[in-house]
Amino acid sequence: MKALIDKYRIDSCTQCNNECADACPVYRFYGTWHPQQLAEACLASRGGKPVDHRLIWCCVNCRACSDACPFDVEFGGFVRELRIGRKDRTAAFEDLIGTYQRMQAGMPGAGSHVSGKKGGKKRKSPEWVDDTMELGQDDGVALFVGCIPFFQEAFGRPDVFNPIEMARAAVMLLNRAGISPVLFEDERCCGRDLYDTGDGETFRKLAEHNISLIDRYAVSTVITICPKCAYTLDRTYRDEFGALPFEVRHITEVLAEHLDDIQFREEAGKLTFHDPCYLSRYRAVVEPPRAIVKRLSSDGMIEMERHGRSAPCCGAGSWTGHGPHTRALVNERLVEAREAGADTIVTACPKCLLLFNEVVPEGAWRQASVEVKDLLMIAADLLVGDPSGGDGEET
Ligand code: SF4
Ligand code: SF4
Image 1 (tube, helix red, strand yellow):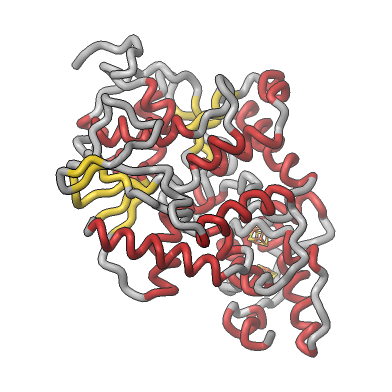
Image 2 (cartoon, rainbow, N blue to C red):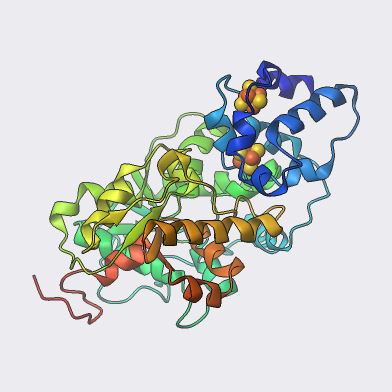
């Protein structure tokens, strides 16, 4: 415990004005738990007394506390390491998603939702790829699809929630930007959730698989759809394995640089953007998604009161400790969007999209007259000359 306390500077806490607690989305709902309380419990338990499991599992690893702390105390990493080896995880969501991710680490072919063409050889394409998409012609650039195909299988609902459309939209938009990405055959989950919940062994298996895959395809740039994949492939893999010979970019960073090359119809209405934690706080990417949103909205983009690095977590975290606070977080965001005058919350993370859709009944969204949509899906729908048969004009 002492090593962890030193590593994450827990001893540096001066019990200031509780900036961390004010920023913590979990504390705001329970009022009985906050990061500093966890620090105190751990400092008191240096002698080996176990720490209350609720203190360890309800953190969503959003990094709001570390961002707010004037003394650089880092609770997110501290909590992550406290979880290592614990058997008292309880969340059903985490059980389901964690089981799938562990299966991916142990089963050859378990992750082959995606495939592409390389070196003139055509591989079997995944079902979501169609003939209008250009794939595999830029050998230097790959698209990392992440867990989206699993989310589609486990949570997709026809005409309501189809996360696989994010993957289709990503390819269509990259094509319009002049990029024909390689899709990895046998790509696996990046391992983020397992890493954050203390299963470092399975995380390493997944990471080693993905690193060797990237090496085999000899790509120099990996574009991700999920912000967590971007941070994990870019930072956590390097932290764990040292220097790696590829760059990692989130797709909004890439598309924002190509906006002059892509034509959209500006019809999307009153949009506001919900910043995913792993894009804004973890990766400091705030402006690129906004540049895209602004291009799509005929009414301009509306900011919610809490935005950018101050935006609250959607509540997904690593699927741990979901409880009343998770639903409250989403409800609170819904109200915040409505009060800002937006009719649509746009996000750029499959997990935010899943959480927003799964924890709040559809009726609540309708009642609030607010929709939640994915940025890539909206952008692809508004492409001028939409190859899927939309009503845009040919360029
Ligand atoms: S913000 Fe930092 S110094 Fe202040 S109570 Fe929280 S951990 Fe301690
Ligand atoms: S990472 Fe987020 S949820 Fe966890 S203690 Fe910090 S502010 Fe609270």
